[in-house]
Image 1 (tube, helix red, strand yellow):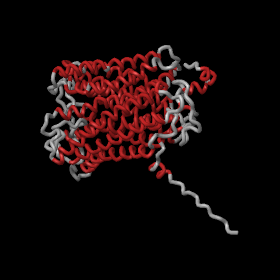
Image 2 (tube, one colour):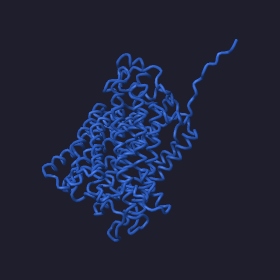
Image 3 (cartoon, rainbow, N blue to C red):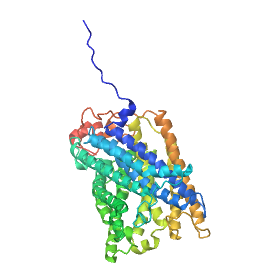
Image 4 (cartoon, one colour):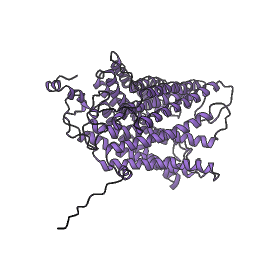
Length: 556
């Protein structure tokens, strides 16, 4: 009797599997890996800038390269690192698990968003990199870099001032990146709305998920405005339309800042959510004022759309309009202050477990608070008119964004990588990294507050000596290399203890967490949960450990 041959499905190679995956966890890992690469590249550009400015009259890089490096550093850090890492990376990986879902609502659209981001990043950075290679090999300038600054102010971004094709490529890349982010925001909102576990009410959502949902709403309201503006500016440059080129140049500023001030909170709110996850776990007590934290998050998102023109106090805006935006800028400090006090009261009286995630969280709170206070200064019309376009502004937004987002990202990495890979990072290296980052960050950016008060303008490639700027610039440059060394320590830590698997086995719940991701194996299976859990409170994993209290309705 002849045997029957049953065809066996050919298994995909690992590379093909990752390239074609629709698993939200793998997509999240790709987001994290690619955006971290852009972080390293943008950081290297920052080192080039700080090397040029370490002493007066330096000629390491010329003005044209400085302008391009400055443009790519800013846009790379914002559009290719911070937002994709927090929303695309952490958001994709952990939000579905935190709400008890098996995947995102639209897995294929999720994968499309990822590869659109990849293509946008290659467009934004690829031309600049090709220009560097061409100059280094003697081919000459290909004109594929953008020198229009990260805010692309009209008229400097018009064809008359910036004729090179690199500006067009860069504008289109940012527009595509915006489309990717918009699709991702839709996916996040639909997933959290339609795939929540039974009992997972709005007030029981984990703080990271709540912050991510608020961020997704902001993305949907703000990003299409910038994307439309980028398309209009591109047509001005190439098809002789006149949306911005012959009109009041403040029109572009209104479009740009209507997106870009909410973008500050698009970068910071997810990091705040990460901090709000870490603090109660490492303080061994429930977070203080959970509903106040949730409401303050929503208020920050709402008020974020009412403050954009405080970036335009020196552009001739009507004084009555200026006063309105000064008021709203003061007002947004209130919900932000609520968060800071809630975090402090969470730590107060807690049994603190001083591991790296908590250290990074404390670094976030301290540096972000300084940035927020100086933001209140800049929100006052007469002070802003004196300090506008000075290094005081540069220092302020780095205290908000690096002090906020980057400390939050590293805190989240030390907190969640054991879940992603099943191995612990080295705690000693993590502590060393934190202190180097903390010292290097303040050494870099606090002297820039003083430089701003002394009158040093931003976006300058060199300066003359004996104006009182020399020492502070040198300290700032030393601090930048200290930060770079701290990041190198993290990379070493990751390679040895995660990639080479030398780290301690993490187990399913190494931190004794509260949210649902810690009830899955480390790393989680593709389906996340064999059985979708039922949620009884805002601390669902605590309920699972104490079922007798969950059944009786007595929750912490």
